[in-house]
Length: 252
Image (cartoon, rainbow, N blue to C red):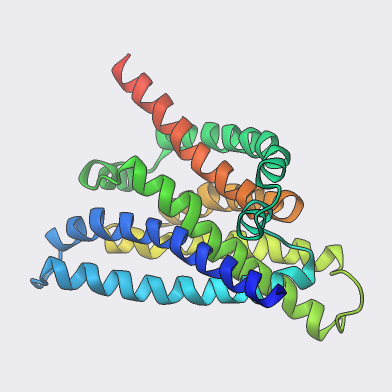
């Protein structure tokens, strides 16, 4: 019974994560092809993106679904959904801290938008990532990849090989997983800058790392303390609120 529930949870997580993969693939890949040195059919590029990202997502889902429960890390809402019990109660515990973190990260994103290096500002005028893609990919897919998959693995490794599975993971191992996953989350945005034609000058690297490490830490803490959906909600809310504030400021 337990294995069946974990399998169903993994399938649900992969499917919801693929919504973000599809959103990014169909909206961003065609823009990147406009500046590509060689002509690549849009359909082939999108299909390749879906396949590659789908496989990476499947690995992250498998890792988290297999070992998260051993560490006390959970996806309470979706676990309740697949088991048919208490999803609303689980969500009630998650949304207040998630909304608070979302607002804090939104404020940071608004500030960073104004303080971005000239290279980043130029890229923002050349490329447009729709809000729906930011919400679905950032709020769902990235959280599955970086929190459910990567952070869980980074905590499990020292717990398994240093702590020898003795009791719950030490706080030091959890903090290591939080910081390491946040740094990897931030570094993972650097190739996107290059793909869009930007350079990795010192100000650009510092901007990208700072602007993603701090939110990554906050989302990771939410995952640890309240569950995966809290991190998802905070990440999605940050994009929605910051986009609304910037749109209002632009039109004012």
